[in-house]
Length: 275
Image 1 (tube, rainbow, N blue to C red):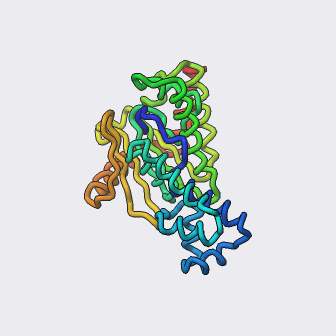
Image 2: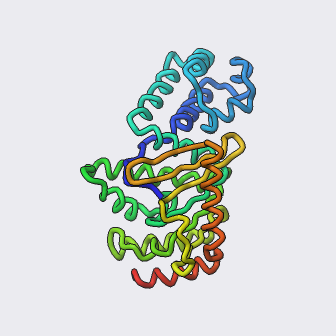
Image 3: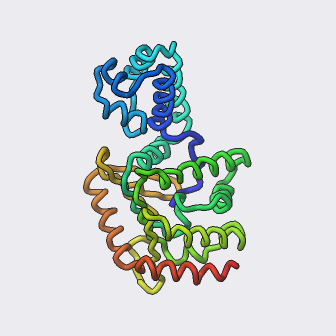
């Protein structure tokens, strides 16, 4: 899924600030337990902040800056991450943060390869299709999309379930070479222990997902959340009834999709067209 709006060059604000917090803590020669005692927090909360699984507010950033004798440097980093995130649409910054916090992502894509599984060349072709986009912004967006994929390689990364419409495998994007490389990547992802790829065949005759792409995200530190995409207005919601509706649609699509092994065989068969 993903429309062609440029993606943030930075990770979610909570993730980037967590990196800075850890760096300043190490420079100060403090362990997480020591910092937790100094701030009156639990070790688990400090750990969650450093992993980007919890947001830091200005009060915390100021207190941590003082405790670590950062001379205002850590507080400045907090302000920079918030300011940078503000340059992009709210829903897009939220999406990146949701992906970082989730332990399971489930998505449906009727039109293109989802961003988490795209090659650089495929992503570049997608972004170039946005009216008025500059070459520099295309490259920035491609780099950000590749960076987002790193969560799949984390030791505690999310499990990703994806249902693709069969038409995605034959829709020309970029060039024949781009498509060949992209389908080869999908085939290779079959070996990933936390990626489960299924294809909805044309002969399923299912209309449930024709309205557009969506993703469901869940985790122990977040409410079940749905991301619903359209060409002009993408939405993120944790409203229970809407999330339940998206879950029901996903279950119908997943139920009619081919099993994992049969899906892989279909991808390999379609890949021959592009070689």
